[in-house]
Image: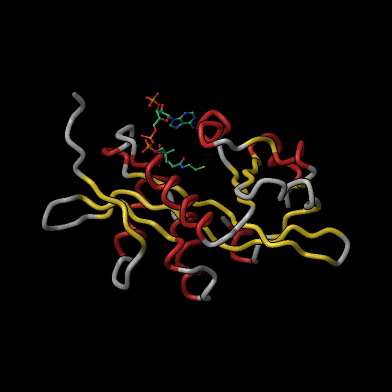
Length: 179
Ligand SMILES: CC(C)(COP(=O)(O)OP(=O)(O)OC[C@H]1O[C@@H](n2cnc3c(N)ncnc32)[C@H](O)[C@@H]1OP(=O)(O)O)[C@@H](O)C(=O)NCCC(=O)NCCS
């Protein structure tokens, strides 16, 4: 028998911003991820229903993990196709390797699927994201916004056939430039 789970996953609620911010600064050991989420939130750049937190199950409900899914575009010629960007994903250093990251990603992917969102892009370690089914974006004819992203840039098709009909260069909202 494994240890009892001491956290739960839910979507972002008003009042979570401070806890998400603090957790991201700890998880990433710097400000960039926290700043990205804060600016996107301020600019209305994401739907809180697609922003998930992991909270301790005790009375304090401290936020120990977070993942964001926010809109981006895949542009071919002058025709943009919608896609979602996964990230940042962070888990409090003292709570890593408990399955929180996996649960956050799966909650977000389920929510995207439910909304009929077809394509998710991520910049991250393929050793981590392959378990969710992500594959190299360039093999799916999706070009990263920055050539240096290389094999860390990955894609997942949520609706069968979506990638057959989509190709082009991913375009991210401005706040991502500093992330
Ligand atoms: C990456 C991160 C979100 C994983 O969260 P987590 O809650 O520890 O993840 P899970 O418990 O679901 O999965 C842990 C497993 O993933 C593995 N793992 C973690 N990071 C990995 C990586 N970069 N590459 C490959 N495997 C990785 C762990 O070794 C562990 O494997 P095991 O279950 O076989 O022991 C967390 O380590 C983190 O916040 N890191 C710092 C911020 C960061 O780098 N975020 C990712 C940006 S793309």
